[in-house]
Image (tube, rainbow, N blue to C red):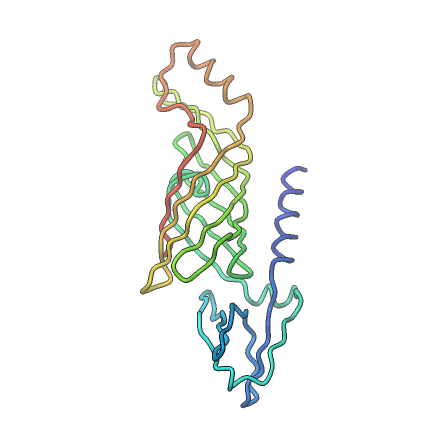
Length: 223
């Protein structure tokens, strides 16, 4: 039930985080976009082409009007974009993939699957960009899934533990393509079962591959 509530909250945030604008040009063209900012001569916008977000601008002399629309479920679905990353860390399920779906340039819902030494790991959560520009994004993220492993090297066995994790990171954008790389630091909220498992392994003379750290670092490559 708790997982369902978390997913419902994320979808609610996703729905309410999107806003779409419409620009009508002097030649009659209507452009659906997101207005970023403007100066004395130009209006700077984001437009969407498939899975790509394109940064561009329109001269004010070519604009008749700008209409700022309220949230629309239809528009949100139409303008979803997808990003795929290969990396290492909690949001990648260990060593694996992370797929993110975004209704706009600031908010995204993701799921990650990978190999977590003791088996298959996963995490699902959301990201929100605190700072967003053409070179890098600074984001906050929260997720639920694998956040600790206790691995006994003596018998080559281990346990994967699940829980909530929060973190912050930076998306570095490539100048020549839609790729880039991501670095994040996460704090996992671990259950008492993790400590109990560690103590049990120690009591039986087990040797750890490594004990869980209080914080984790993730790194990934977007392609």
